[in-house]
Image 1 (tube, rainbow, N blue to C red):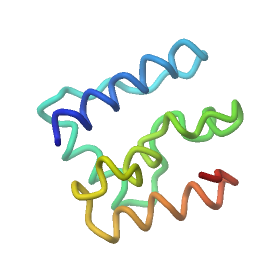
Image 2: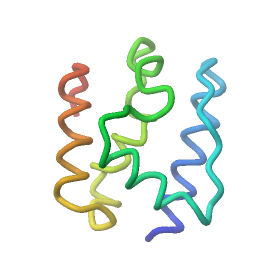
Image 3: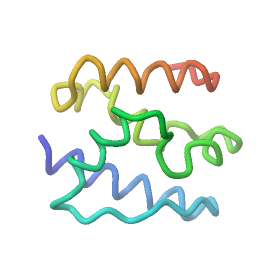
Length: 93
């Protein structure tokens, strides 16, 4: 499941780049650690606000964290933080 999440996150970064949103690359071996760190802190993921401005929060780390395919990878706290950020930004599923 982790490898599918990492691949999906990388694919979302590529799609974001096509929209002109550059997100920092993450080495595959560091991806889960980075995702959990981002979702545990107060900092939004790279490109979150730019993706929101383009109506593409579906490409954000936060959206992946609450995607039913990947919810088991994250703690309740991390998933709740991701959901809160998305809802506060006006993202509706």
